[in-house]
Image (cartoon, rainbow, N blue to C red; front, side, top):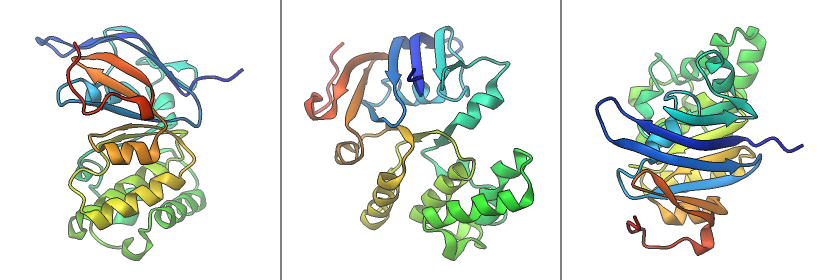
Length: 231
């Protein structure tokens, strides 16, 4: 039986004192799929992403990763399945060196130190960060920070990668490097982006958000574009 990598079932969510941000969201992403999450600003994309590893919990409905419904009792387990790369790399880089940042996650999993080192070396190699492993994150360029933030996630060896606007603020060269690295990764992916060239390059399927609801879910080649409100 093919267990879905991510499954939203009739998910609704509102921030305290605010209007409903997610409205009856249902979709399934299967292992190995790479899906672009698109829509205008304020359509609910980032809020949806935060539900994939329990940073937010649904008011109604369920979110499951690898067949396990996310709740307060199993947050740690579910977060090991899903690695999230935030839009702002500074949200993920807080240690004195890049290497220490990449090792932070595995060490907090209580892995043996030789396993931590193996994972760190592999993550740094995959993302092209070996040359600046001893550098302080605040000395890095925007592109280098983005690669380092991806390395911090890869060292945890998640099954699923979730990206929030991965090319935001990157110049052409850094964007090209990121695309090359992400394109080679075998993980299941859900990627929020306004960059439709990026979405078409990396993803075969698109989910279009509009005012907190899903307006389209299907092949990216037939996605309505330019993106306009349909609700």
